[in-house]
Length: 238
Ligand code: SAM
Image (cartoon, rainbow, N blue to C red; front, side, top):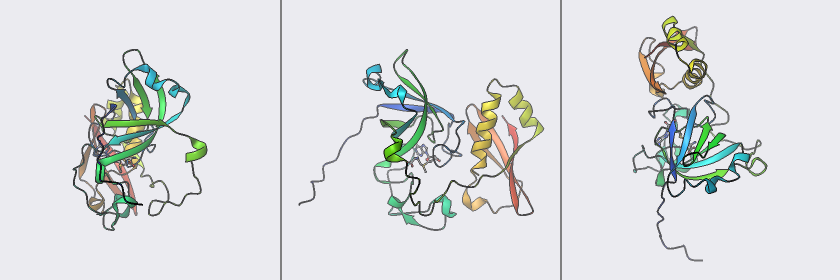
């Protein structure tokens, strides 16, 4: 058979994400790694008709297809997965890189609830998307067809190891004054535990302070190295 002609297809977003992540920096590299991350998927007209989600409330997990809108359109055949320390290359299609043809992303997320009072808003947990991400499709997750525990996962065989996270007195004081104290504490621990520092910085000496924006705060943290072990300390929450 002949190859199909090179038709191109236009995607129109059906909605967008509002999440705990105002910036790309610091977001865990896959969904589910920070389950304390809350997000809403807001559907836009004409997809925000409650009929489009009838029956969806009976599913616990969803596939969200979205556009990596903050990535450049340019892509290369080889990419450097952060998981490999940023120095080994694999094919773009052997990776979950954000720099890919068509910039399509796919995340499996927990559906925490659906509000249909004004339009349609899906409440999601554990998503790995920056606030403002355009969503192009939603599908319910089917565990009997899609969960494959025997699968082989190449250079990413298991969830990344977590770093221990500690909080300064200052940071704990700030947390204690917030209504979302417990969930923000969990979110910071889960996000920093993934070690968001750029791979090439991780060998640097202790002391340098990094910032990650989560919800409406700027989380300042630094690495403390002792006896081979690294701990991330939350210095302040501004
Ligand atoms: N689970 C999805 C997938 O496999 O297609 C996303 C994986 S991608 C490696 C996750 C990273 O994408 C996050 O750590 C964040 O830095 C980045 N990211 C999230 N939303 C984005 C967006 N709208 N545009 C560009 N990058 C984004």
